Structures are given as C-alpha cells and as structure tokens.
Length: 252
Image 1: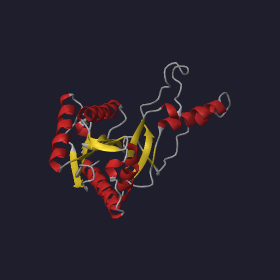
Image 2: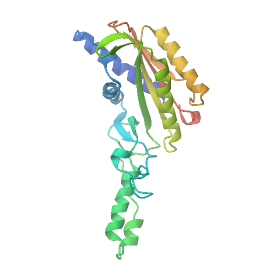
Image 3: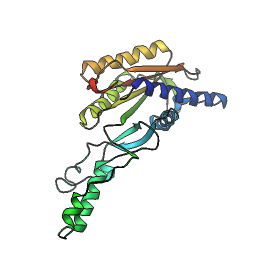
Image 4: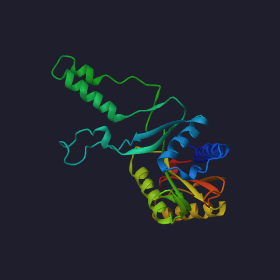
C-alpha cells in the first residue's frame, strides 16, 4: 500500500525547495539550522504538495491505559497522557485519523447518559456511521523524524558534531515504538542528515541501518534520497533515509 521511496522523494523535494528559498533570500542560515520540530511542518507541507495528507502530533493507537497510579485500573487516558507520532501520512488530503479512544469515550458518555433507561440497549448497540473523512490507523503511515548534522549549531556557534551514537539510538527507539504497537501496520523513522557530501551520507545511513539490523529492528534496506546544499558551516549535502521496523512483509 505504501511506497517508502515516494515518501523520501517528497521529503527531499520539499526540503530542497525550502533550502533554495533561503538561498534566494541570501539568508546566512540554511535548513540545517532548524530544529527537529521545525523540520516537521516543512516535511508535512512537502507531502501535501505531492497529494498526500499529513497530520502532525497524532496519538498512537496503543495508548489506552491511564498512567499507573493516576486513576482506577482500566480508566481511559487523558489526551496529554498519550504517546504521539511526529507525522501521520494519509493516502490523500482532507482525511482525519480515526481514533478509537475518542469513540470509546463517546460510548462511555452515551452509557452514562442512558444507563438504566429503556433506551440503553438500543443506544449502546447502535453501530457508528461510516465516516468517509476518517482514515483508519491501519491505513495510514506513521512517520517519526530524526535529524543530525556533521556540522551543526551549538549555542548558536557552528562546528563539528559527533552524531553517530545518538542517531543510532534515536532511530532505534523510534523503530521499537513503531514495531511494538500492534495497530501500527505501516510506518517508519525518517532520518534527515546534513553532512559534507553524498558519500558521507550514504556511509552513515548505511551504518545506522546495519546497527539497527543487528538489533533485529530493521525490516529492509532503507529508502534513500538527498540533494546538495550550499556550504555555510561545512555541510554540503542533505541525506534522507526512511527506516521501516522489523515487520518487513507489511511494508513496501
């Protein structure tokens, strides 16, 4: 259902356009200066430009039980207690994400309202209407995003940065999160890497993939793309890799 290469190509196209825009403005700062969170809307807009839908900060479907000790066992969680995914990609624009927790809370409210009345059985048995504007959790692509730079800004000062171990750990944690939610059938961790050249990006993305594969976290060789960027602080290439968790048969 999902072509990971199409997601990578869309991200590259959108990020490259954002970089060109900064060059036209003669900005001293490229997209390499942006934080991980600041890249999210750029990637979301890039996906929308290619015909996908993109929803930011969506709750994972697994998060059902309230935090231990907060309320009685089995209580439904509050929204701020749920783990969230950076981006959820839908097959087309205009779709929202169907959320079973919202439906469970609606059902709970109906139960409280009609409990003990003649209408209880009918109200609780009534099937929800089909909503053509909602995409199921098994139909969308759950996308976590990580970024790193061979040269980056620390307290506003550019310089070299040893990103290897933190990046492997970050991608690995995202793959575990995606793998361990049984309702997430399609998803991946997107790496945006700023470095000195295409060869460095290829090597480092491959090294992260190898480390994750050794831990049994990776389903297949990641889809990879990239583009040249102006050399402002030492980086001349933006590499993009999409890693999918170890349920490979479910992914393109």
